[in-house]
Image (cartoon, rainbow over all chains, first blue to last red; front, side):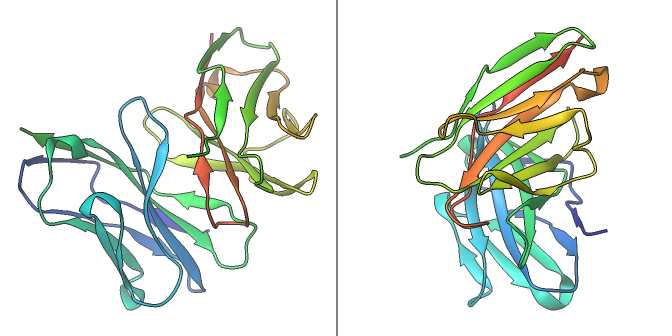
Length: 114
Length: 113
């Protein structure tokens, strides 16, 4: 069965540190890739998405992600985190051609210390 | 910015009771979805709905679950006879076209006691 793996359950960083959250998926066909963020008490918000083209995708709030097809990965990065980035981050995959349902990873909780 | 609205934000129900979770998708969206997230676990797809019928459903979406778009604006998820393991956060989402423009609601936390 198709799956999405996020290997880091909880990441703790100090402000200004660089961030990289891993995401791997298991599916050999065409995929569409997403990163969502969930701030405490709020709904899932789209950070960025990849459908095709340049594998380096820039999203909101200074986040970016790189699609590496050979590694089945879509890691999320930010050069310098802020306290306000404290949230849970979810990687999600849509299998190309499906009706749109997303397969989510388990999420990575990011805590940024001021 | 348009929002997907879910009500109530928190519902407590007794085991065996029926519960209806309500969602108002974005008005010009055509695809509607329900997901759930059991505490500490991943967000899981339940069902997608398009053109007034279910287009896909997961193994979780068994006969205890049903969805309806009763009046052209609301999109509801009904759980017929709730079990303790149905306790979760339920998210509604809508999109204009499949995975494009996906927007999630803020969720309903269902607690079955």
